Length: 122
Image (spheres, rainbow, N blue to C red):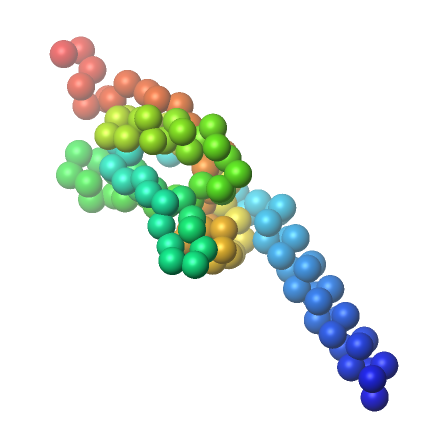
């Protein structure tokens, strides 16, 4: 009986580890989005995550929500610096959301400040 229980626990652990590795390392898609960085915060009670939003239109009708992994210190510093400015985000979309990594499936892997298309030639 103990042997069956041990095998069952090992099997469940391996299945979870395989699922997590797949979700973490395999990307569903990669892309870029541009907009005004309207929100960037470090939130959560027990598990703190970095979350942000960009507005992709003049009226703010299109909001793109994203997460940043806590170990991406350079990206976090850039986003804090670019608050309220027009930015281009390069992101990776994962197959599923993992709550201790972030609130979304979209994880920023690079950020660049850009010139706003709304204020060009002025």
